[in-house]
Image 1 (tube, rainbow, N blue to C red):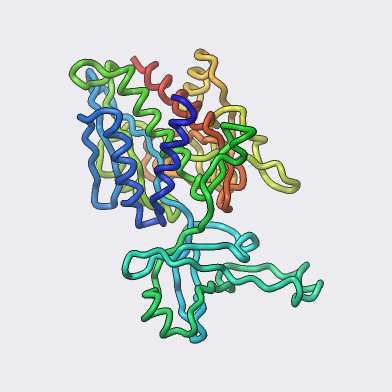
Image 2: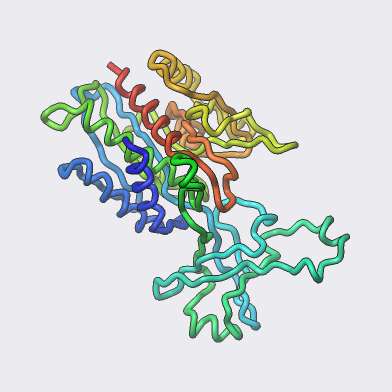
Length: 365
């Protein structure tokens, strides 16, 4: 698929924000993109707002589920102060150090997005010792929206305790005049993977489906856009418990990190998708045979790939492997600055990850 079309898809998906637990707007865009591939595609949802399709195989020796989560990091308003500023809790994990002066969007009671800025002290007022020593925690921070007092927040802005917010920004090619591949924006985790899921479906429908709409391969296949990954992989676990699934491949992000003192597997932005063997500080170990098979598929098809270990990371695949005993693997699309805003990734990385999974599925005979 051409890069312009991949960018159109991810840009379209980015137009609907998806704080954990409120993913339906993005799910509806995902549904429309799948229906563009083939008008006969039937996209279903479940009670936890997972969006999925099932493609039957020529036989049903097993069922494979390919997952990518829809939700993004953000926060939740937990207190409205008398002077009209707002305190918040995290929704998903991140650090306080990059939040100062970040612009956010809060979903109010009427369904409107209200702009706010996370308050930050001025360099003109902070003593040097404080600047160097203070660690800023999100629970100690507050949001300014321009309200005069608490009553103003509630009655005029229609913001309530429990209101979700997401981080604002632009979603774009980083330097369009110089590079047509590098993308920059919010919610790259997990817009890149959700886009990859659409590309994968396109490859499947156009290459390994017979005239009856069935896979030519001997397995049933689920394509699933999951919810609530950032707060505990709830959507994936719910889906897998309620379907007969024999194998899971989760498409997510692979962490590119080369700053001093950081823990990484030396993953590169442009060296292909990451086959992840372990996550979560060693408490999440993926299925060895499945990881090895994906390596073999990549080698046989001359596809770029990287092997990786993700230390401070948890995924839909990891939880399915650990808690449900379903053989699982994680494929990561390389991104930089994960769980910050903006994040950086590539259009080619999305295509390469989709191709790796497609070739794996095509090899199952």
